[in-house]
Length: 91
Image (cartoon, rainbow, N blue to C red):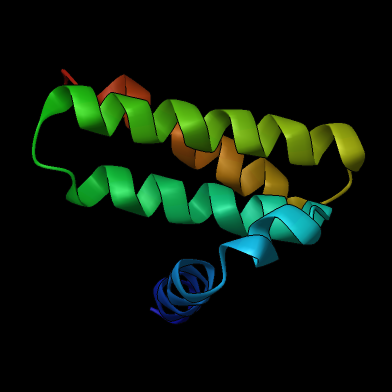
């Protein structure tokens, strides 16, 4: 539940100040942005939009891992995006 609260706060901050996303490209920021995109995919109404969000989340997580592969949140964000893509037509 705490993770969802953090994701929602970051999502709100990015909506208020989009420059924040561009200026703070750290492993932590990219991981958080990836989790936001994953959450946006979960609430999207149609399959294509979910896929777009999950693929965006995957790209952000990969970018974060390229910067620092010892970051647990980046691995979790990648796992989230890939797992949700697998669930698109399953479950």
